[in-house]
Length: 138
Image (cartoon, rainbow, N blue to C red; front, side):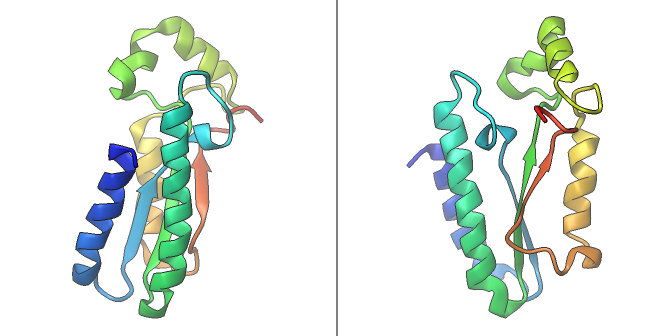
């Protein structure tokens, strides 16, 4: 079991007794569970495990009114992988050209979605993988 998935799994197990009924769980996955990027097989596999785990949480915690969903960002300009997108203009340009919106994402693009999923307006969304990629690789 990869350290990343272990962290998600064991942290979730520790917080479940502390989570209020009606609470929200939002896990983070990746667009790489939908499209393949050479060199990312382990990373994408662990993110796929998080997606499956989230579905089980949704089902198992449903009686408590707790929802569990997963957000799967596409290319986001962050410090991930040594700020590869930010520090490589060619990579950033290529990734931007592969999105329907013509740009790479920013942290705020994901933060708004997470905030929505934590709101009462998202009370009927449960067990879902929501990709926020600007329409990458459509």
